[in-house]
Structure formats: structure tokens, C-alpha cells
Amino acid sequence: MRNTTDKKRGAIICAALGIGFFSVILAVILVPLVGEAYGDVMVWIFLLVYGGIILAIILGIAAALRQRLRELESGEEEDARKY
Image (cartoon, rainbow, N blue to C red; front, side, top):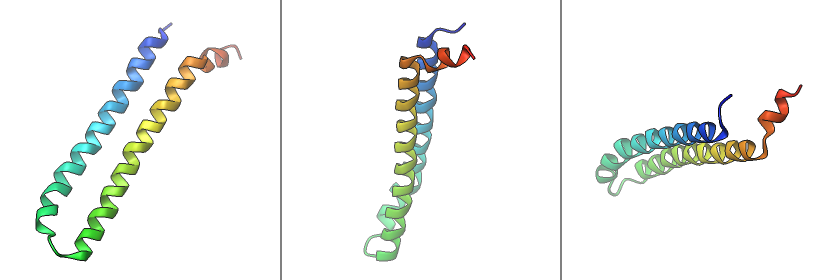
């Protein structure tokens, strides 16, 4: 049986990879466009919406990690094995 610290480490690594991946996407796509979008309102609206979507994904990953760590702390997984 795996230790809960191994499960915590796996959850943290997975969340860090997901957050890192989406952060790189945000930087690679949005940073070059910011310089090109000077003065164009429609492009700025697109950038804000697109950036907001990626930030929402990052926050969702962080919330899922928080929930998973709480589940591991409370021992829900061990309780479920009884049935």
C-alpha cells in the first residue's frame, strides 16, 4: 500500500506540471501579442478574455489540488476501501 506522502507528492507534481504548462502557453501566446496590440481595442479585449480563460484553468488546477490534499489528510480513501 502506498503511503499518503507519496500520493501527496504525486498530486503536487501533477498540479505543478499542469500549472507550468498553462503558464508557458499564456506567456508564449500573449506576451508577443501585447506589443503588437498597442492601441487596438478589439485585440486587447481578445487578450483579456483569452488570458482570463487560462488563468481560470490555472486556478481550477490549484483548487483541485487543494481538495485532493484535504481528501488525503482526512483519510477518505482509506474509509472507502472498507466497503
